[in-house]
Image (cartoon, rainbow, N blue to C red):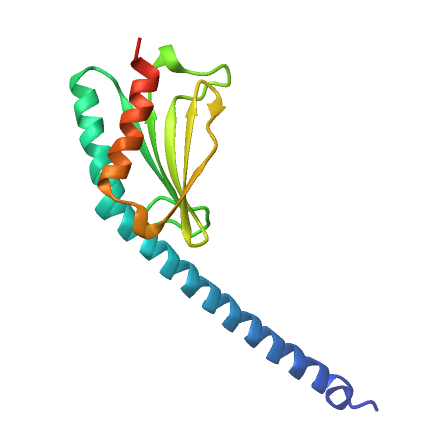
Length: 152
């Protein structure tokens, strides 16, 4: 009779150790992603979102609709990239690919990348450190987007 435990026991013990290591590595990565997301979320909620809401309210009074979109949505699984986008929902400014004019703030490693898309054309991205993001910068970017779309 063959002792299967003796023949295969060490193999499965090694696999069990590897599985435990993979689970630990996964949890460390999830914790790191959560920390990165929490930091970006704080920046969004304190610096970016309040200004976007102010612009959204102002534009709504002028009968111009806009959307603010966050990715991932709060409470969802943390899968990057983390971003917040302000989009003008104006059919006069929609691109051929059905994209509305928008500005997007995206977390890229330790920086924030700001991209603007108008009528299907994306401007070269601007890269900022987290410390450079403030309400004045956000207001300036939103004002520029709106002026580009509506300045005649």
